[in-house]
Figure (cartoon, one colour):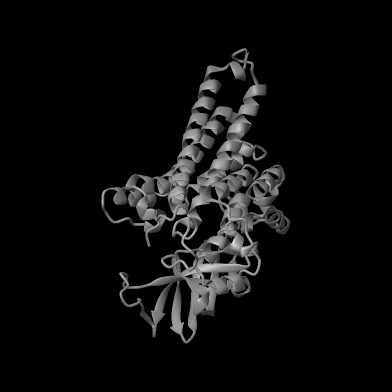
Length: 389
C-alpha cells in the first residue's frame, strides 16, 4: 500500500506542476486539487491498519511529500498538514478517534501553539481565540487549536504540573470556525494558511488532547515530535525539482559569448555539482536520523534510548533541509540568471516558496537552541522538537 501511495503521488506531480500558477493565484488549494490529493491516499497515510490506514513509516511519509512537492510546494504542504490527522488520532481515546475520524482521509488543520483561551465548564471547555497560519483550514474537516486553560477566569494547571498555566489541543468541526482571508504572501501562496477565529464554542473534554499523553499503543508515531517529521519533504522535493530543471536547461543552452555549450562551462558544471552535493547531504541527514529513530522506536524503545547526538540529529536535520533547499534554489536561480526572473519560470516560484518555507518554526534558530541546549544539558526552548513535553 505504501508503494501505491508513492506511485500515485509521483503520477500526480506533473499535473500539480501544470496547475501551480492556478494554485498560487487562488491563494488556497482548488477543491479539485484537494480531491486529487485525497485520491492518492496521502491524507490517511499516518493511520495504522487497525484504523483503516496503511501505516506508512516516517521515511515513507517523507518520500510521498517529496514527490508531491516536486509538483507544487503548496499542495505538498497542505498534504503533509492533512496527513497529520492520523498522528493526532494517536493522542485521542481510540473510541473517540474512531468517531471523530470516521474515515481515514479526513483533514485536520490548525495551529498547535497555544494562542486561544479555553474556560473550564461542566463536561468540557468554552473555546475562543484567533490563530494564525491555519494551512489548509479552508478545506479541513476538523480544526485543531492550542489554547491555555482557565478556570473561573484564572489560569489553570493540573495538580503536579510543572507549568503554572497548562494548555491543550482542542478539536472543533470546521463549520464552527471563521476563516479570515488574509493569506497574501511572498511564497507558498496556495497553502491558504489564513488566520481563523473560534468564538465561545463548546468543546467536549474528550475532543481535547495533549502530546504528553498518547492514547494508542506505544510506537514510532505516538511520539510528541511525530507530526513534524515529514514536513521537510516539502523543501527537499522543491530543491530536487529545481536541480532537475537547472540540469535540463544547462544540457540544452549554448553560451554565444563564450562560444560553447553550457554543458562544457566550468561555472555551470561546478555550481550544479556543488548544489547536488549539498542536496544529497541534506537529504541523507534527514533520512539517516529518521531511520535510526524509527529503528529504536519500532523495537519497543523510547526516544530516551537514543544517544543525545542521535536524538538531536532529528530536528537539526529538518532545519538543515529547509535552509539547504532555500540556498540551493537561490544559487540555481543565480546560475540561470535572467532565465529565472520571469513569472513564467518555475525558478521564480521555487525561490519565493523556499523563502517562505524557511520562516516556519522547524527552520528557525529556536531549533538550534533547543538541540544545542539538549546536547549540553541545558533547557530546550522548543522541547517538542526533541520529543520532550
